Image 1 (cartoon, rainbow, N blue to C red):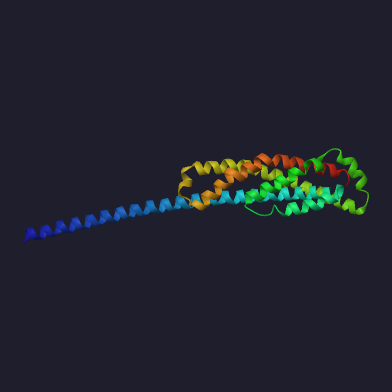
Image 2 (cartoon, rainbow, N blue to C red):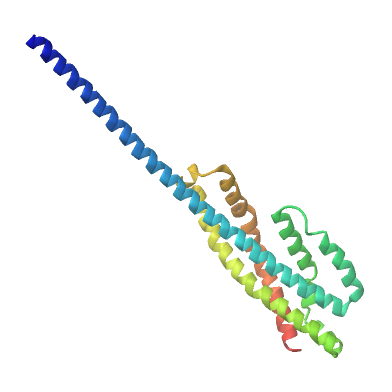
Length: 220
């Protein structure tokens, strides 16, 4: 009888020990799982923040280029009204396609107007044109748009340089491996195409804006 009782006690202890061990393993697994989920959520939040900043850089530089184009087309309306009408239809064709396509198209359009709107010889021509209240109002509009383009363009280029390195480092880090494919693809699109384009082409647009602003400042 005693032997039977001892056997039952041993079996019970073994059962309890197994249950405790299983519970401990499950608890440890649960903690690891929670820790992994927290790291993934943290990485996703970091990636989303980088993407939001990249979108803001794009918007800032696009707005800057739009302001520059507004200044340039207004100049063209003052010095060559006939050509200015043709430019309006060309500009309308740009506002379609992907974000990168629209930005590249707008920058290319602006570049095509550089020689006509930033030439030093333009000053003497404008002196003859800016003689009426209406033309003075246009001159102020040109100055305001060009000044805004210069300021916002500079800010966007500076942020693009910083953000380009941050996104590249994030994508190359182990942290990026657990985030969603859509987010990772979005970051790659900015670091591979849009930000490098802004860094490469932005300074020349800013210089054009500065030249126009300086030229028209003298008439105000």
